[in-house]
Image (tube, rainbow, N blue to C red; front, side, top):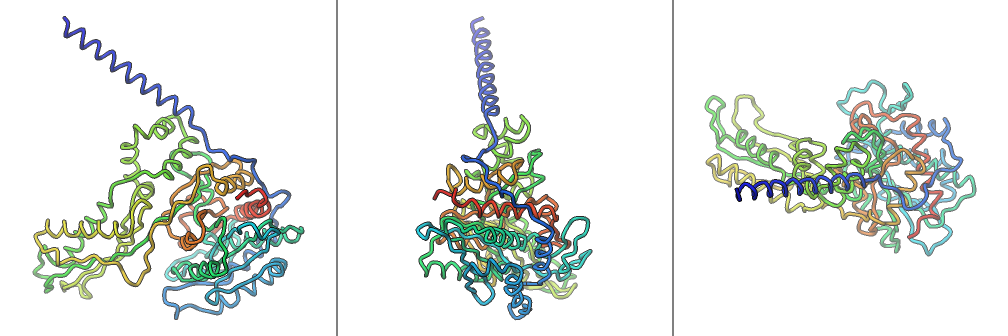
Length: 504
């Protein structure tokens, strides 16, 4: 009898405990609200982009400034036309600004401000574009034709839209007699797509001249449509850091021979198993403060179920990690990734080669280093060799010397920070329907070089990119909506026109 009473008491206590936890979680979910800027939204005033702005953009897109890994294969003529084209289209800007050329074709411009005591800001983009070789475009990739309300051209999304919008904004504001309260520097690389040295050399030039920016704004995130977690509104995703990058060469060695007598230890087969083990074990997922903030903003704009889950990560984090890790796009937010991009084996179909090679493109999470990522790959290669009954000496994992590697970027401030809030206010003024969240960017940008001279480095393109648009970057049929471009100019007008509100 006594035992039964104890069991009933324990069950009742457990029920009360579960009910208390459930109630606590529900309260936290109810309190989850979308992020709001600390100050009032900042808009573009009376500015409205017209069709002439689009025509000028089309001219920029028709200059085929293609960069290539081998500098000898670069057509220099389009790059020599680039600055003269800008001068002709935006004469007021070039009359008001100082231009310094970096590495011959890189641009570094200064728009003088009224108060030299204030630290300047730097706005960035790149005017080089990736090749279109081997792609099948429906329209001329450098024709910049407008088809069904969209401008079809290489570079329309990445990132001549930023360049066009910046110059439209400056030309408009200078024409109205506006001068920024602090210096505005604009940098555009001619070789960002091939990790060229222009950004590094621009930073060195600025450092040599004693210039330390208060804030840097480069490409990266955008006002993203079609966001996950069932969010129905676009969300401005601002990169507060970016992953590091390293390419790894995995080499397997064996005796080789005729394909009629294969063995389990043949170089290509051993390489395949090693590569599979590396790709399948990218490391444990890890939540960062930036990722928590990303998920909180998305969940706050989603259903009660998502709010329950993401407002209580103290309880649900293991489940969330498992769910996110099952999807390639969300898994990349949690950890270092190893993408197998190249394989090299025998030159003949009936020969077992003595050497087989593979390349991994590795994106290093901000809580790890390049050394961590390399050490993990090497340990996994050893594990597979031992499991296959061969000496670990048969496989090597080395950093590819032909491709520069970079460490993850420092995380720029995003909580209760004046610069980050200023961005939020500008987004809210131009895109009042949009959410706003920090995130860690998977791809690399020139902005990583500027971390050496600035703490507040953000990666955000002031245009709305749908999931389809994001998939078109570097792909065939890249294009941007005419209305999307016009509205994006408004963001850059708002950003520049309201710099007096940036308190830092």
